[in-house]
Structures are given as C-alpha cells and as structure tokens.
Length: 598
Image 1 (cartoon, helix red, strand yellow):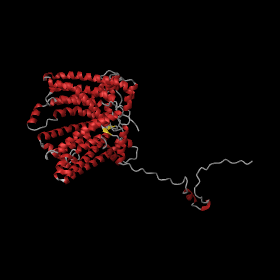
Image 2 (image 1 turned 90 degrees about the horizontal axis):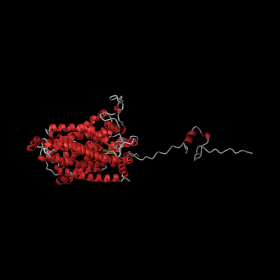
Image 3 (image 1 turned 90 degrees about the vertical axis):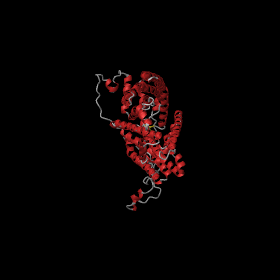
C-alpha cells in the first residue's frame, strides 16, 4: 500500500507570469528577483503634505470646541470672558478713536503712546498676571518631524485666534475713525493695515519674550534676575503714564512729544502711527512705518525661532545636592526653610515650609513671584507719584502736597488684593500631587491657611518696605499705619475670596515646561475669576477707606488694628467656608486640576 506524502504549502507565492528555465543564462537570478511577488518593489508611501499654518489654526479651534463639550462651567466662563472682552474692546476703541481725532499736534504723540502701551501690555501682562494661553504647547511637537520655521509660523497663526487677539484688533481699528474723517478711505485703509501689523507685533513679541524667559527661568540662578528685570520694566511704565497725563492735561509737553517721536520710528508704535502720515499726504513715510512694523515682526519671529527649541526640549536645571544641616539639634526642624522655623514643628509648619520652598523652586510659581514683586513695589510708587506730573501751578501744588487724597492708602488696597489673588488657582499648581494631601487627610482649613501664610511670609516684608519708603519720600509718615492696616485687610479678604474661588472653580495647568503657559481658554477664565475676587475684595475693604476719609488726622492710626482685625476675621470666615467645601469636594478638585492628556 502506497503512503501519500503530506502536503506542504508553498512558502512563497508563485509568480504570476511564466518562469524562465534555469538554464537561461547568468541573468536568471536578476530576472527572478524582478518578477512579481514578494521580491517586487514596495509602492511609494502616500504623502499627506507638509503641515501649514492652517493646520495649527484648525487644531486650536478643534481643541477649543472639544474643551467645552459637556462642561457647563467652562461654557459660562467663556461667555463671561466674551462679555469682558467686549467691554475691553469698547474701552480700547474709544481710546484709539479719541487719539485719532485729536489736534494735529497731539495726534502723532497720542497714537505713538497708545500703540506702544498696547504692545507693552501684550508683553508684560502675560508675564505679570494672566499667563500665556498656549493651547498648542510646543513641547508636544518635540518628537514630531515639524520644522521649527513651520512650528513658529503655525503657532503665531494659532495665537491670533482667541478673545485677546480679537480685542486687540478691534482696539487698533479704532484709529480708522479719525483716519477716514480727516484723510478719506485711503488713510482708513492704511489704518486697517497698521492695526493688522500691530496685532502681529503684539502676538510675536508676547510669544518671543515668554519663550525666552521660559528657557531662562529653568536656571535658578537666572530666575531672580529675570524677576527683577521684569519688575523694573513695569516700573519704567510709570514715567510714560506721567508724560501722557501731562500731554492730555496741558495740551503740550516737550518730553512727551520727543519720546513719542522716537517711539513712532520703532516697531512698538510705527504701525499705529502710519495713518497719521497718510492723513498728511506723506505716503512714503506711511509705507516706511509699516515696513518698520513688518521688519519688527520678522525680527521677533527670528528670536522666537532661536528660543523655541530650548522651550520644547529644555529641562529644569538642578543644582548640586546640599547636605542637610540640623537646626538646634532637631533633625525634623532641618527640613523646614529657615524663614519658617519659628513655627512649632507639626503638620501646619510642614505645609507652610512646603509652600515657601515651592514658591522658590517651582518654575511656574517663580513666574508668579514676578507679579508679587511688581505689585509690592510698583503699585505704591505708581499711585503716589504716577499722577504728579504737570506744569505751572498744578505741579507746584502737587509737589508741596506730596500725597493727594490718601493715594498711599488706596495703593495698599490694590497691592494687598493683588497679592492675595495669586491663590485664585492654588490647587492647579499642584496638579496630581494634591492626591498626597487627600491620602494623608489634611484638613481643608489647615491646607488653605498654610498656603496663605506661605505667600504672606514672602510678600509682606517687601510690601511693608516699599510702603515705608514711599511714605518717607513723600514726607507723609502719618499715613503709614492706616496704609498698612488697609493693605493687611485687603490681603486677608482676598485670601478668603481666593480660597472659595479655588475650591469652586479649579482648573488644570498645562503639562508644559513653559512656566507661563496656560491651558485651553484658561487665560480668560483666570482673568475673570481674578476680576470677580478683586471686586469682592474692594467692596469689603471700602469701609476702611470711608473711615480714613472721615477720621481726623490724629486718629487715622486706628485703622492699623481695625484693618488687621477686619481682614483676619474675613480671612478666617473665607478659609473656614472654603475648608469645609474642600473637605467635601476634594475628589472633584483633584479631577479638575489633573492635566488632561491626549
């Protein structure tokens, strides 16, 4: 009986065509390799095309749309941000339209100062207060084959989508009112082009500066210097305000006209002044100013191109490890920073020490220290001396009076409120690390009180020093106790309001190396929450201001203990309410501050 051998399937597919015999010659192997089958060359991959700026714009719009799906709180915050943006646009359009219909002698100077102020706001405000809304985080493109030039242009186009860019564009278009009335449609067209170029300057300057500072702030040795430089930049805006006030009040100011003429030939203000030359018929000057704006945008994009790689790939620098030193023979106390070792060792002291250490070491919190430094030093000086520029009898009277109507006391109300408002999203900086506090069952009131004490320890010494310096320089030390009382009261009230806000409306911070970055739409959300808390603080501090105006000069010192008690009471009430809410909503807070991936 014959045995049938098992069937072994072919390991390679048979060629579709006839196979040449083996004795066909030396070219047989080559011909076989060229035959159809697994040896055939693979088809060329389908090319999807290079990414363009339009892809980034559509990506941001899709992210913005998806972020508000199923989240009514974000929708309401977005609606409130739209109304707030409309109000800001109305104010900006009014200012630019007013400068465009001024006299021929004042128009170029006012336009230069208005344009430069708008650009400086785009540069300084994200650094000092709200942060940059980086919906398209450049770090997410670090592993993708996207050229840096395409990435910069795409992120620039995406940055022009949102509420702040629309407000800025509408503000710049306010100049078309005077341009059309005095120069006709041609001058109006120049004003429109200038507004568009000015918007590009604002966005490019903001992104380039934040990208550069994000890289520098990863070095702890440079962070203190960067904070000081930005605070000095904020202080330098005070003389500009004085010059503009002198120009508006007196109708003329040689210093303001000189500075305005210089600014009009820089990218800060050149695009916004081009329509003035168009009204006068100097079309070559108008073209030159627009070209200066375009050149400024190109230079800023080149700078951004040089720093975006470090912003994407850089990591926080770490210093050499230092050996811990014991304090007073107590090893546990050695873990506390020296500035809080006066507190009894325990959970509260540990939380305060953690806050102080994080404010010094965390890049995002160190970026917020810039705002603390600015409000602690700039605000008292700006309120006291910012409106004292004039000429003739007005300036002599102001110089002899020193302070006008208690400007120092009012400045401390603003400064104390600003310092407390850095806690409006205090859990967002922790992110998933807040889960450790939940696992260790930290009471909500202890948590919030420790965070407030940590900020106050770092801020109030500088705020008190600045207040004392202003009162001594103005020769009005009698108002010092009242000013400190109002400042402490405003800080306590803002801490209570920020505590409640941070528990009811927390939001995540982006998983980005950029300390100034904000998540989708959170720049507007944070500004709205801060604005509401600020209004509450001012309303509850108003009784102290009324008492300051009604009390005789010899009894104004009473406001120091009164402000301390009033601020402490409201801070205790706000912290107690927020603490109880936190203990009930801790899981929701953790979910809200957890960065969303994907």
